Length: 161
Image (cartoon, rainbow, N blue to C red; front, side, top):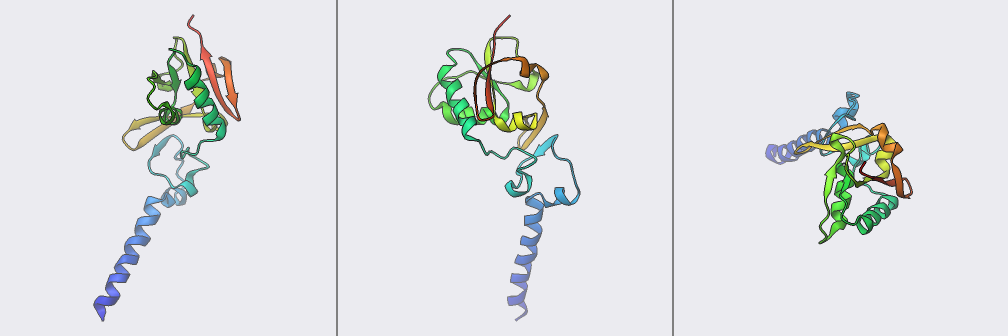
């Protein structure tokens, strides 16, 4: 009789411990500001308002398709989340992708920034396996030439000086 009660009890204890720790409840209870260094995974329901969780808008997809169709031989520069979207639509084409983690490039290229980043004013980059970091969008980005935009997502063009 004791064994039949012990197994369900242990299962409940394990699940009650596992889910709060894996879903970000501890961060919420401690009021931890996790917007600078993001450890993956995050709960969609708990963290979608703070961190990008992979929900692209139709404007993001429009801009992604446009820049892939019109970039010619120029590289496309983006952050982590923009690059993931670009990779998902590249198919068999060969496209030079670069990251904005070292600032605005000095060479001719397109800069793709999805709507979440522009709305929050933050760019996301990979730091290590399972860890991301965010930083403010450099002010120079807003002075670049806009060549395409769709519902909050923007493609800029940098012309080599």
